[in-house]
Length: 235
Image (cartoon, rainbow, N blue to C red; front, side, top):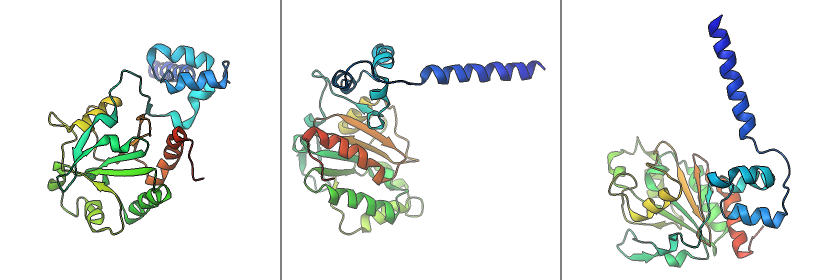
């Protein structure tokens, strides 16, 4: 009997928490005010959440805002970084300013199928002048055979892919490359899980959005939203 009562209490607590975490209702402030506050990150900042839940719930519910970290004036920028290409050429990331940049590490591509690579290529061709795809090979890739990481072989044998392939780096641990340290710090990641793909989508203004365990075409909405910073969309 007591076990049933405990289960009922736990269910009620869970239900109350779900209700309290919901963001129902319409915005009370103007669309402009809510957007400005949301773009500043107030939907996610702990100190501002209750205010936004009360005054701008609809804006904070918009799907494109999930996982975005908006830059403040004092924040370091993605465009201040640099890295070497696979050929040893140093690339300053200020070249990506004004573009949407999709960053992924090669070990994330282990589960990629031909369909996934085709989707990524279609995305790149849809935005040929406004989007860059940057792939970082990692030291862990040498530990995987082609059978363990079929996407690796597909990636290296794929033709027509116009991705920028960078130097081999560490993405976890004390020797994490500065690019991945920056991207992970923006989203409070300790380590990236190689069981699924992690994409970082950097907007033309340097705001960083993260996507985990999705197919490339799921990035379309994020890319389109990021391009709004340029007042540009091909659709």
